[in-house]
Length: 118
Image (cartoon, rainbow, N blue to C red; front, side):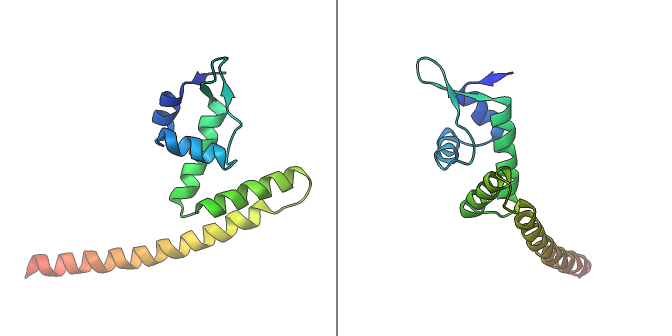
């Protein structure tokens, strides 16, 4: 499995080193392996997982939502917890936001067309 130094993991995920450490400290991924000298080593799995976290953040989930997501995943591994419901709720919220933004975009396009002619 490929391993990445912290700077490489930061570059691959688009997150700062501080944010990577913060997410790890919150238990959103990891634990991250370390070299004998104590330097973090990020695996492909770590980088992929952080990619999912970034996607969820881009979808509007806050840190508390991500912690709840991780809690539900842990609960699910123990036979309970509904991670699907959490994701569906956030999907519905995101769809509503997209619909509002589509309306706003259409209004802007109409105004651009109108004022471009006048």
